Image (tube, rainbow, N blue to C red):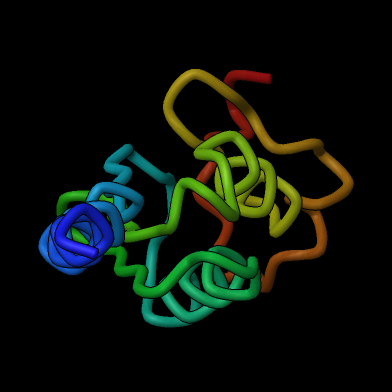
Length: 113
């Protein structure tokens, strides 16, 4: 009986730590220009099950997300942002996705293509 009680107490003590350990954060640069970009980038990330919070700063281009690593991988979040038409550090969105962005959200310099 004492052994079971001790095991139960140990589980109670470790459970919050195990839950917290599953929560991770992702930070990366994401291209964009305006408030509409912010809405699309955040929506793309938070549409994935397991992402609990996301934000993007239009001045610094810094994107951050909080996610449950038991439900989602960082690559899944990156793919969603790329699919929405936004370049991320180390990867470029497909041209067809980028072309669907409103003109205010176009950030690529077409003079150098």
